[in-house]
Amino acid sequence: MADDGGSFGPSELGTKEYWDAVYEQEKTNFKDNGDVGEIWFGEDCMERIVKWFREGSLVQKDDRILDIGCGNGALLVEMAKEGFTSLTGMDYSQPSVDLAVAISKTENVNITYQRADILDEEDPIFSVDRFDICTDKGTYDAISLSPDDASQKRRTYVNHVHRLLKDSGLLVITSCNWTKEELTEHFSSGFELVDEIRHPTFKFGGKTGTTTTSIVFRKKDSR
Ligand SMILES: C[S@@+](CC[C@H](N)C(=O)[O-])C[C@H]1O[C@@H](n2cnc3c(N)ncnc32)[C@H](O)[C@@H]1O
Image (spheres, rainbow, N blue to C red):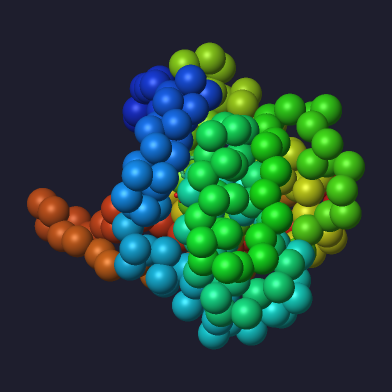
């Protein structure tokens, strides 16, 4: 399948200015009334991902896990509550990192957060020990909406996640913009599909589909 950039166009969701403004507002809301903000793709979706971690055979509780574009860190908080002990969240938006740190303090969970841009090859995140697992819920989608050469940014993303992972490391990626087939094509240079986290299906015009796709890729060791 050709990687043609998808059927959706650029959007403000593909810009850092947008996310900085969103998380500044969410920081204020959290301070004022304890509202943690948006859970992207909903709580049920997040719970199905956490269930995969809890019940799956591919993961250890002490695996080094990095959430790419962690936003408010809600997924990591749930994983910490499940007993995962080595959790890091990164996001290129400083207000998002501030919010995630504040929420993790309130929840009394031990999560490391750092401001980092997955697309910046000079970022210090690429100098730390590699990770067993990366998670992404909505970040590849946001990058895909960039007004500025989204196709190149997506290719950079794939290369950089490959660099962040140990050999045979896993990427658990959730998207509402791309299908399983499209994601498999985009990541085929460095990853193989090993599992899928099923979300509810709907029927429209006689066709069955899902609004959200969560799949698990394993890093291929040689490219
Ligand atoms: C749709 S939100 C999802 C947030 C979070 N993963 C969740 O599920 O609630 C996309 C996130 O990706 C972050 N992001 C976008 N581009 C990024 C980049 N180049 N590096 C790091 N984070 C990025 C945004 O700041 C935002 O927090």
